[in-house]
Length: 107
Image (cartoon, rainbow, N blue to C red; front, top):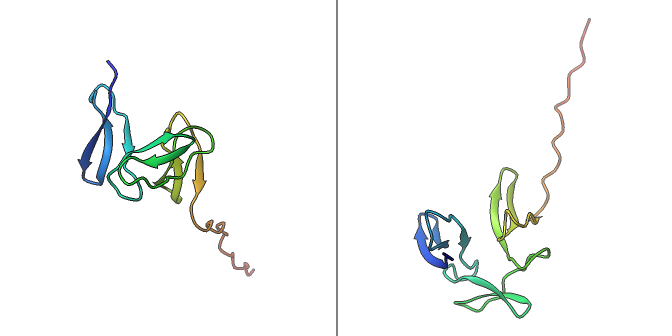
């Protein structure tokens, strides 16, 4: 049985989840512009079904880029993850960590 994405409201806001839950746990984030619509790929671009705003496309597949949080800070990741592993850094890169200077030893 094939599922459909259904709009759901959760503790972190609106998202879309598969109608075959609990057998399928697939979810998609809502539109980053309006927060309620579902971005879809059509005619070579990705647009929100509710507000019509364009959403950044994934350069590797037909997905779209969504803001995610990781241990190194925010980044853009493909909506088709884990099928598509594309990611992009957001904002300035963090400077590399440098070891603290070690004081000289006195004999």
